[in-house]
Length: 60
Image (cartoon, rainbow, N blue to C red):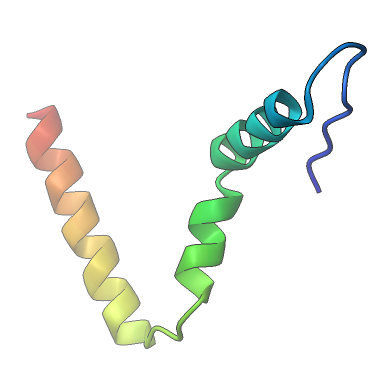
């Protein structure tokens, strides 16, 4: 679990922004959104194949 300590003379908004950035970097938000709804294994494979094809097309 990521943890952010509020620094001295730091507003809560800035600490919250740092926390959100940390979650984004670690991929936790993406994982939560993916698990929000059940995805059938066949749909997951299809999505992963589409992502791999688009990555391959971008790199070529």
